[in-house]
Length: 359
Image 1 (tube, one colour):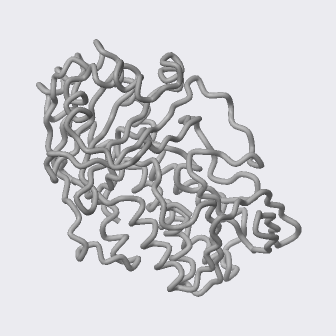
Image 2: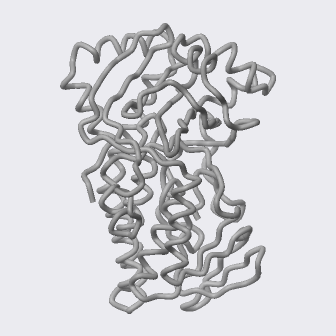
Image 3: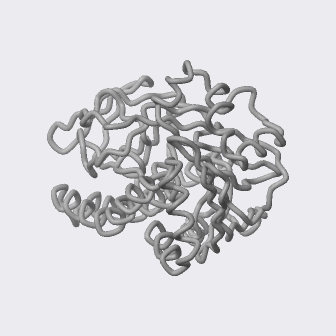
């Protein structure tokens, strides 16, 4: 029921097929997410049926990246992006899905998927269902019934606030701190998204107290200290997601085609996880339609989708891993940002590695 699943549901329903979508929460709701979407997805969302041009969304085309000690790297974002809260975006997509005949089942968890013959049988908290094909777009947190992944070297947590702040509408900033980084950018209304990623060990070393960690670690960066000291925080408590990992994943597992973060997550500092999710849906939707009208067999669908996924995403995700390694470390991050400030062509090359073309 996130971006990948909603966009896939709309496209397959538009092609004339019956679609059911399961969402464990109830729309609208907030999610831990940076809420910056690169412009590569703008045309796709408008074709899907969202009138983005009418919503007055912020056009973000400037980037600032700070080191822990306060050095700021400035760069233009050649492709750029826009901001919108997941609260509004997912809700609008769910409405669009319903308009196209998708059955949206909320407050429902999928518990098991089994294939018998040509049908798949789904056990859910809302009852049992039959389908010809199933796609899993459950995000970074893997359901219990799916294949177990190798234990990651590091587990991460994500923390998100909405704030009111004196901050430019056309700019996104990434601020480093020990073992993590925090992004801020404008979303809809007069809100800004403040979202950070850090290791679970960082939180644990501060008694699992988020406010204590923010005070002792994040606010060592002077830019973050200013944001925390001079902003109005709109949540009583932050949204938190835990057990986040960046292991290599599969495009098909446990009788389901996977897309979005379920198939592989780009490092959040690259700011393009939402675009990857939507692009994956645009790749998978026509393949599913070909399967449903019996132009393709399921093995053909599995092979073609995996190949397309690798072509479009493998290098971007790998680049994100390597770039993320350079951040969240005091000396290394400072040296990296200083060096990039003197090599603008290399800087734009790195930014380009994490972005795709408009689709």
